[in-house]
Image (cartoon, rainbow, N blue to C red; front, side, top):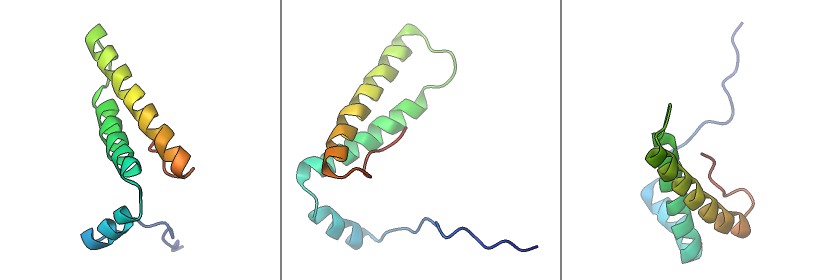
Amino acid sequence: MITSPSRLVPVPIPDRVAAMIGACLPLHVLQAEVDADCAAREVYRFRGPLCAEDRADREHALAALARANKILAKHHPELPVTP
């Protein structure tokens, strides 16, 4: 039996289209999007048993992600980034 592919296929967005979308968003929302993406990557970096310093760094990244997501959610409920 052949199954049909998922209709949700990630499609790359050309740079010019991304720039047009970005031009429609307020600057603080764009900055929050960048901050959330960086913080989410930082959170993923920490795996396994963590020392006290790594736990503190992970908590700092989670706090930065929460701050950025708060701004994104205020602008639009579907924008927050999940770690």
